[in-house]
Length: 544
Image 1 (spheres, rainbow, N blue to C red):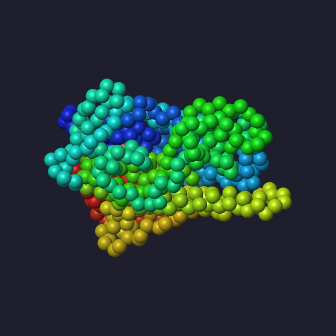
Image 2: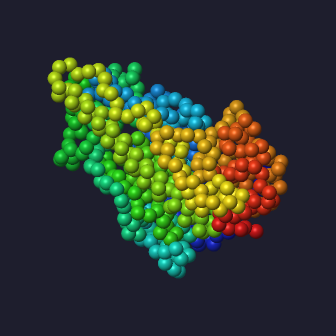
Image 3: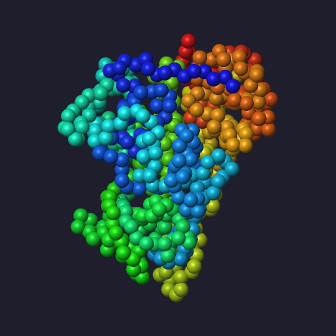
């Protein structure tokens, strides 16, 4: 294995912060951990005084768990999450009725061969402390960004960004100058508003309320566990493995003076005579949009600031985690000097289409889920005894969504289509929209397929804060790799995987730090500088 030492990222002026992260939710916290691993100095500011106490996002899908596996966090997150048997949705008339339909959360309810990890059902307030502890970079709670100025130039020509911050505890205002600002400050993003970036999509879908409460519901749920119970009176979800519940429902009139214990009891249905102890209440707006652009000069949007998804399918937070996984290695390359600033243009080129497709899928999921209840109402209104089952309006393959999670295809200057790595200038293939069906492929632009290198080590475990060259013939590539001034490692790909990856006995895959394939040589190139030229093309630079 060839291992090139990483730059320390410490060449920046002490008064110039490399990256300011705005927003301390899961996406911002993950970006902080990723950038620290790259040796990039950051400051994260969060306007709230503490991490959110609400469960909020409920699902960490299989692709996000792959990202957390790379950070060494997956096992800890899984240990604090629900058991896999909770990886399903149950449909009921009321919580204490029997199921009339059930849908599995594929990749959560059981392992899938397409990944070395399993997704989990867990609450955001259980996830965030783990992410906070994954890095030592400074974080300021109770600190709100109120103004931005890209100085010494406009737009793409600005040399830095000056952010004005207010500390809500002291009232003091400070100014921070940063080379880049990463906005992960939610659907109501202050940064997006200050930049005047518009959004496209359905917009606000309605006002909703989350009520976190304690009640003994085991008699109806313990033997039929689920991550979500979809009823005619709202959604019910267990909050933690050790106890606690959440009720999600449209915000009622007179919410300010509502009797929340009574409302929850009524939603549980007649006959559910159990005491309800309300712990906290949160009102929120369900949004559905994608920002018109994800970059404004040195300011970049990610997570809900870039796209807000309906909660159905758990696609919102997870899409944001893939945003920063795509972006952080590019920021590190630019800041550490082995990538041209133009590499950052590929962030929007790659992630904006993904956000648009994911929004379409999330809206479709919401419509399909509502059709289940619509069919049930029709059955009940028809009179007589209601059937025990409702036929679900989707196939098992459709709602699995692995294609949307693992089959994402990138097309940008940071990906060389087949043939381009050998100097073939013929047009590459257009990205395929695999929908919800995942098809294993090692074509450039796709996520590197999960293949076992050893009994417990996946191809995904070979990836990290470096480019990876996977080849069945490492000796033939060692010389080129050793001479490359980019962070790069050579990894042996077992011969039985060569055909699956479309490689001959001397071919190779160049995999980016975010796990997507940058280039493929079906056989060893004639030129000894081929690898160097491809890395220069992908990063837009020629270090050294």
